[in-house]
Image (cartoon, rainbow, N blue to C red; front, side):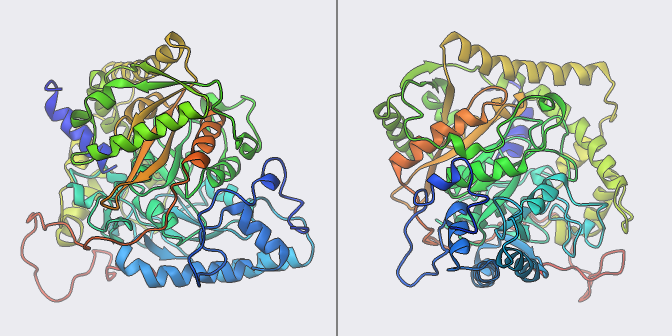
Length: 558
């Protein structure tokens, strides 16, 4: 683990930082899962707290709940809890009006738009929404810029009837700006520092910290995050969330502020496997290598008890045996919970097989080299599509951050921005092409060879360890909660497989989730703290601080 230490540490920083009227849409597996999959309500709580999407649909279909009531309830919880959690950057000023319109459609007996009809969803603030909300990746630089259209994934959500409730906080620029300290993995200049709702001074991870904290705290029914490497599955592990990073190409990248089009993907982040299955069916919008493949139209049909019976599950042994090297410092007490989950899998009829997908250290430097070059180019392409902004290049953003140091560089710098800007940005360079090819081939062969050699159906790794193999290989990775430690901190594990095996992972995860039954609401333990000022900025010039477009900085959600 000593070789390529500078690159490895840089990459690790990125990884860590990073009813009757309802019957028309309750098709396939949905109608059979209404009574399962959610934790019980506390006395006096609203009926919608902790409910799954199918359960919310049943309540709305029966007349016991409206989308307006549900949307207003979530907005009230955001107002109550967001000053502490900072999971939401801004709320949609039209959310209630949209919910009323969807209620009217339901009341008039019109066919529901889809499985999300009237369901409020939070989306990460690097996913474009062509409405009254901002899309900024948490940065003050993109305030008041305008996107050309909704991201494709937003189009899919709206078409299925979702209420886009608001924009969730994130590690700024998806944690690809600088070397963020662990207590700032969920910080952005616009949103502040996202806090873990289970233990406030435990990391929420990043960069999809806001979606994770928002959904697990019942600030929304479901959430959408994004991942280049670890940014969905990491926050999911840290916050008792079920998160799915899908196969690269299953969900469109269009309209998502990029790190790398060779790795970026959106994915669902939910309280239950059931909701992940519902969301994935709505969000899928295939392109590239996935285009043309036959895909399930409803992933809820894979929510089946008994799915693990006869399955062969690989235990990615090096990540268990050397947690000190690969895991998050201080989190080795998650291992007994993962082992308990593995024993539960055996009890459900699975066979465990020790396996090895290889050491990601062997290709992490090439992946990092490729990411830096891709970021410079792909971000520039995204910025070129915006209007009402003067920031068109990575160099422009570096200059903005320097000019607004006290707001943007308060807790850490912009070393990754600077490293990316120093590259040629030539994506035809043979050295770049070789680096990207080696990293992707090594990651894929590590997983594929293990699956074939040991006749496996899926592979598991412990809490906050191997997100790299599936991310770099473009393969699916599902993060699943496996317990809550005596400290109150969540424990999770990861389960990954090969190209387009989301249905397999969902089936296995559902079977295990139902057996473990560990879902619990957050208790807000610990003490809320902010990161330490990094001391990178000069003393303030005076009482007034404006950006160079003449606009006051806005830090709170609108």
